[in-house]
Length: 92
Length: 160
Image (cartoon, rainbow over all chains, first blue to last red; front, side, top):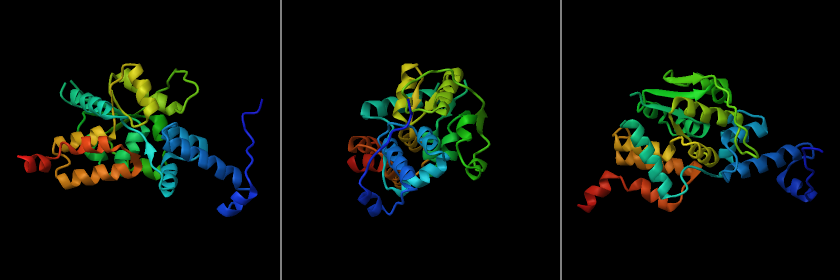
């Protein structure tokens, strides 16, 4: 069984994006990876790995999208836990 | 007792981008990353890494599937476990996995706040600038932004 999926999109979308048929698979993959990274579903390392590029190159490309990523503490309780863990480590 | 921290990719790149990498590592006696993390950056980026950061060759033996984490993420977690060290990560999957394994976790926001409380980020304006810069890359809810700004000394002064 193949580990790849075939995706169909209207050609018009590629034309609007200015993407050639040769570039479309790479572009499609990039969109997916940026989306998953911004949602916090994949790590920086995993995202870079999926695109076959280095972390700093990935971050440069990601910043050009003006997306933000979801990360860090989910809420104030977690933020307090982060702060307490750091404070405990520093004051042991 | 030595104060040790292990940095993952997310925090390492975040605090580097914010210009507070040297300030952060000044908090700790020992700072570690894994070889696998280092290998994921371009040569030029690696050359600017401070000497204080110790690079450890380590291989995890975890099986996590399906995973939004890479082998290097799991290497870093293994390093934290082996060193009984605090793990700094902003990646929510890695943070949860670490907590499930009783590893203490902090992140970029906690580090920034601690740098301010210790006077290493030495003005309110600088602290506000750093927190705002972080929010340009990382989505933080308004509650979390308010939490970060609760410690501002100028706010304390204006309310007294």
